[in-house]
Length: 84
Image (cartoon, rainbow, N blue to C red; front, top):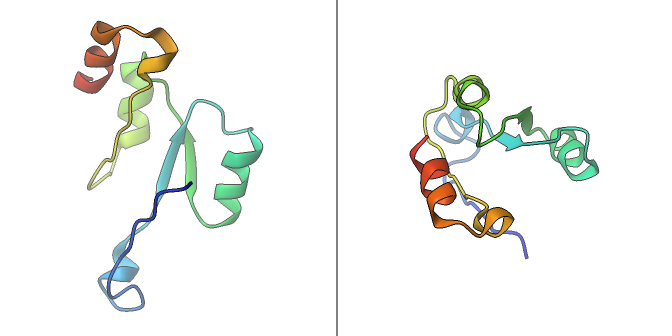
């Protein structure tokens, strides 16, 4: 089930100040395109590429990050991704 993020005052100045950017490895996937149609700015980045992360996060106020431990099942890789 999808997680829900709730913003109070969404129609006022505070709520209107939020814009959502979704980071994905593949912006051509159907789910990524569906998000874009709903107003999400969808951009490409790879946790193994500092340059792509720097570009994808440029201008971000807050970041919610989930690493993909199960891709490598390696705690060192997950730690590295979280520290980038």
